[in-house]
Image 1 (cartoon, helix red, strand yellow):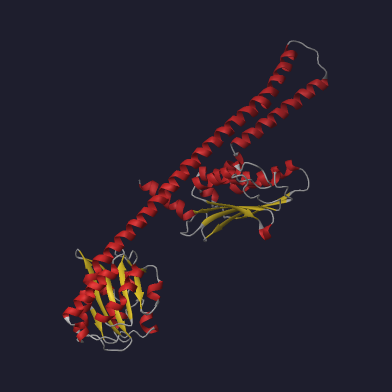
Image 2 (tube, helix red, strand yellow):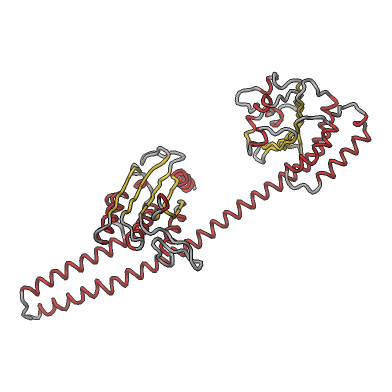
Length: 439
């Protein structure tokens, strides 16, 4: 191991070593390869068993360590709070260097909350730390450690400062490049989400327009046609036409059937049970009706442990969740040939309808024992039970995205049937509402 004061550290030799460090840094595009590339040359100037460069993030609150020589927990931590760094005094500009003969007994490294375990795990006794400064800003620190005690002195401190000055501009550029890359990723993801929501809103608008046309056709082809026939019969009665009692009874039955049909269309257009009695009752009502209309051989169950959390959401969010449940139940009943359908409403994170936990979420799952989801064919996803087109699944997915919920569809338990799952983080919704209120 080369010690300071040796001929190897003569000024001319040291200058050549600095040039070699500069050449070795050239072309390195990441922190870890860069520090490993120059470790041997630095060891000839400042001896070490462990070498790391600690880089402070742009906000000054967190830092990341890139190390060589000995792999420690410092290098395995992606981000660590500066306030917990054992060299926080240096990173925060309170001291201009740290030099110790034995870090294992030096109280400067052992304040409350300090992440100093690697010092003891690897016996890093002699330690030398100097700041890396660019434009008057501390961007990090160069740290050298030896397992033997009392091995660093003033010459090592001076040489370490020279090395830090040489490394600082390069690592500053790497940090700026990393920050630009992260910003570009965030911006690209934001644009992708925005475009996805725009496309989703467009698809949902098309679906809503198709639904409006369907309702119009139902009213025209069924209810209006029935009422027209009834009106003509009533006109004949008003004109004095003689009719039998059975005809009057038939007229009453036809009127009741028309009213029932109209109620069905209105219920599908606006889930009144949801507004009047709450989400769980609306889901149970829809499940019962879907099973009843499907005939025998089909059963269903609702498990509700949501503590009424969904009823505390905005009306449009609750309606979107209800439409997803409707579509999933209809798929299970009409297309999957299921014999049993289960709807589970749950609340995770320990929140209730009147409180908001930071990690709470509403979870809804619809599970059936039918034929299961079919893989994509010809580039278009097919729904549960092999229903072509996948428009129902697309509508469910879009509705979930528009309310910032996670949507998943796949096989049910043990690989049988289909399970549709929707998760709505309540913390995200609360933050969005708070932001909207503040603006």
